[in-house]
Length: 257
Image (cartoon, rainbow, N blue to C red):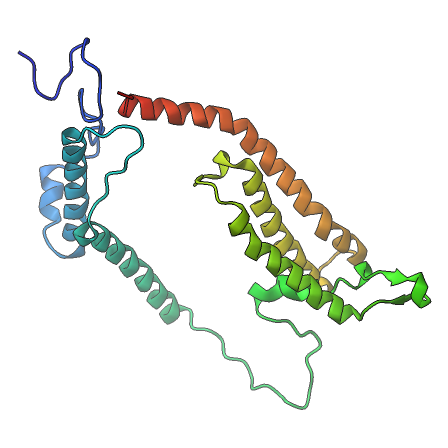
């Protein structure tokens, strides 16, 4: 006789069969550790993980699905308990930092004096940097060496181009990939955008940067393509091994009928 949860060599291995798809928990707490978790959020969190592991193992043992079907868990109590635990932790950290490191309140603003350097909020530095693309504004000989538009207008149009490109990307990239290694090209595009935003932010505060302004301007548009090329090359070399491991895992857990 054989146990219901074990397979013989002649039987095909399906998800939930064999010695158990869910790996044994090597970090199972001892009886003393369980007794210490008897009240409050710690006990609730422990019961959540224990119940999630048990239900996951039961569902996988009883199911006969194949390929990439997903077994989900209900919102209550699994997701709710986890989200409450994470929320409580971060709210506590914010309250602790606000109590121990209160923000410094400076002197009132003087409406009769203009600051030497005016900058927007840090998350808009990249947009502010696009307003400083005056050297890229072409001077047309047909206009007697004058520029077609003002540098300020040129920067506003550059903002429109960048924002438009960001808006179009989700409509172009409609793949089902969820990891950068699965789509190296779009991962490289993302790194190009992030790096360009960073270099444009540095350009917006060029008066504060301890380097030559012309060199900073050149690096603003040279660094993003280099970072994108490196990202694409690295992910491309990782793709073959990643897909091999992924397919081997799925075929081990869910062999086709």
